[in-house]
Image (cartoon, rainbow, N blue to C red; front, side, top):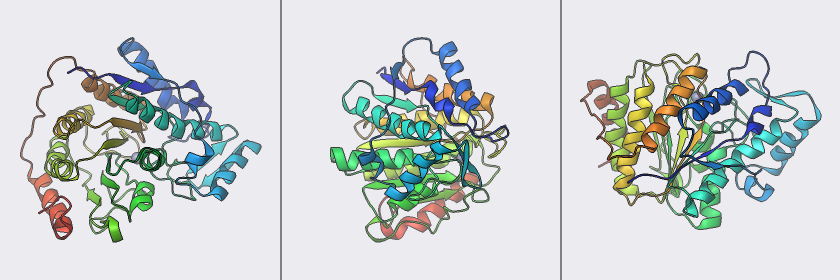
Length: 346
Ligand SMILES: [Zn+2]
């Protein structure tokens, strides 16, 4: 079946200026938008974002923190964290980044599309309730998940985070909840150094945070094998009503920050696998939101692969799975960390 694929894009995301040498710069989205015009001149549904409402922003962020972000409009530059600058118009891009994800979800719920990719910035997965960090100002997907729960009655949301950095903000916000299952693969040696095996959630959320720290030499075959072996059982037992993907591409081997062994093909396979697993659980709405990825060529190449899979017109080929001893070892560690909670590992 051909999927109706939408993208959220807007030139106003470029007004968030981060200085001359910062990796999270407007050129990232410019490169992706150029690629979209060239490679997908028609066929993608375009969604124009609106700024998120204050009411929805407060589902995750504190009023004091929101005021602090608004105040950044009064100065040319503000440092929100050592690595997270804001220019006088960054607040607008931040409001639109969350608003774009919510608008994407609304389009999914209205049946306007089956899948939506929100090509937004600033990214979100490191942002905490009252703190910016890791180039993130508001937690785009955490707010989208809360919005789905509070305003639309969703009870089981899966967030898949394949950015090479751990999404500490998302983890923290849902650590004690079972309405969101957070699954992340990341390299522990990079910022923010959270996301170890032992971080599995607490209280009602015990077992609903699944961290898989991967080594730096993880390959395309390894990553797809371990997703198949871990995300497969998670999807089967959790039966998500909505799937959100924290789509960061800084694991790419040319990325100046992440740099593992991964190529564009890894993200192609992961997208195929997510679609395959989604088909087996009644095809819930699926929304991707851009996180990291700092080599403009590699980044737009990865986004192109994801969109190419999503817009595939014929029956999709099955994801090639090759047994990987390295990945098998990680799967066993994940099962050992989670067996006693019984959410997905037995
Ligand atoms: Zn990242």
